[in-house]
Amino acid sequence: MKPMGEEHLAIFRRHMVEIVDLHFDLACEEIGKAAPDPALRQALLDVPRHLFVPAQLALAAYQDTPLPIGFDKTVSQPFIVALMLDLLDIQPGEKALEVGTGLGYQAALMAALGGAVWSVEIVEEFATEAEARLSAFGYGEVHVRIGDGSRGWADEAPFDKILVTAAAPAPPQALVEQLRPGGRIVIPLGGKDVQQLAIVDKRLDGSLDTREVMAVRFTQLETLV
Image (cartoon, rainbow, N blue to C red; front, top):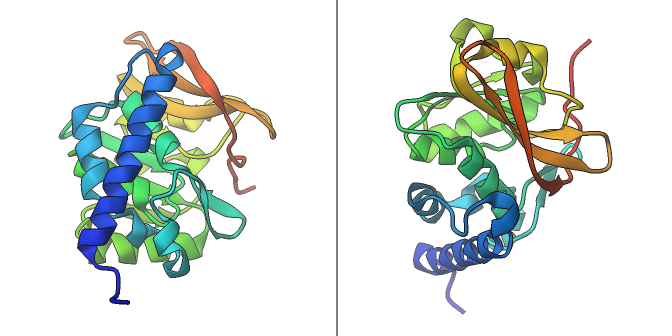
């Protein structure tokens, strides 16, 4: 049997996006729309997810399931990745902060959408590996650093959009402060077992408007004491 090539992986990627489309349609009442944004859909087709998971899981990369990446962490299922980015609504040229880089897949998608991306990862091994992968695969302008994501990246604030890939009881105050008025945070809010994926919009007067979208399950946001 000949080895699997990029043309075969592209077929799997198209199938993944079709499943994402199906999930959006089925959850349209909660999401408020029946399909992902066209630019996001194209990014999902373009970014090679199999390059941002452990090598032994490359063939499973396009299944609609979370995958383990080490240190008791996972990369979220493609539908949840797509939903969070669709809710974030990042526009070309906007400055975005990601809390929780993992191996870099969501940061690559944000860059493909035209965002200027800064990403903070608390696990040193992930940050190092993500930076290497992003650089090697054409997303070298994504900035990655090791640190406590709940503290944000104050030197680069304010941000137009902030994506948090772990759960917290409430949006961390540092992230709220680093979000520009009119900006948006997408974050899973809740306790250990089940959370609500939420949109947190910062009004021009600095107050917050929070809207819960659907139940999700994420690991808790780790912080440094």
